[in-house]
Image 1 (cartoon, rainbow, N blue to C red):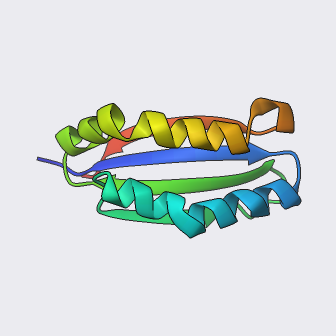
Image 2 (cartoon, one colour):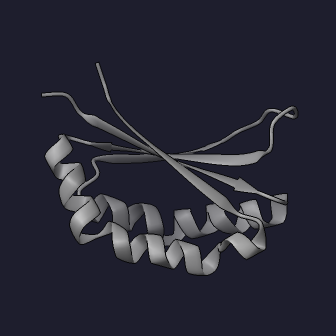
Length: 102
């Protein structure tokens, strides 16, 4: 069985909002996802002057079943909190990818 990689990519209109988002991640959100079943979490600030202002948050789940339990029991509340703090009308957008480590 392969571990599951879950990545959330957030795009921002300014570095100010990006920094607010990173602070939110560091001061509770990552810990909540880990309590919800992730084994590890990391924040990657995309440092490419040719691309939009983006942050990738990468989570590792031991199995796809662990990820599915997270989605069922924890993700709705955590995603709602994120959308309340960083809604589209602030210029923030989110994309998610899911894969397996090989």
